[in-house]
Image 1 (cartoon, rainbow, N blue to C red):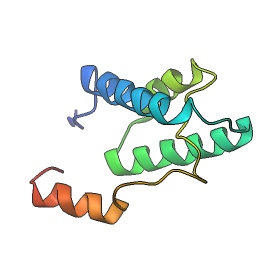
Image 2: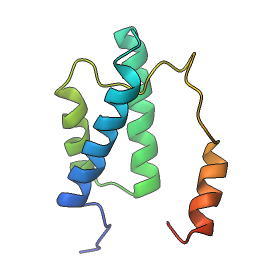
Image 3: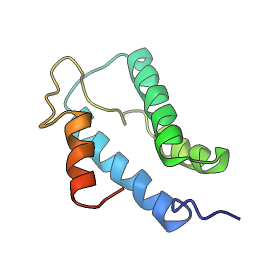
Length: 98
């Protein structure tokens, strides 16, 4: 079996981290459920690709989101990120984090 590094406690920690971020950014903004579902679907697909998640790992992460009616990624119309995804990736690579 290949160790993907995202099993058990690590997957739970990743899920809880996302839950915390989503709660911090999403609770203050009202969104339609369709928009949240679309954003979450895109998030899950990106997580699957970037972290090579198995179907079981992805299902466990989805279960965290499905257990709440208000977890989301915030309001994209007003959210301002401190850096772009490319800048973040470059910073992490420079720090030796993959």
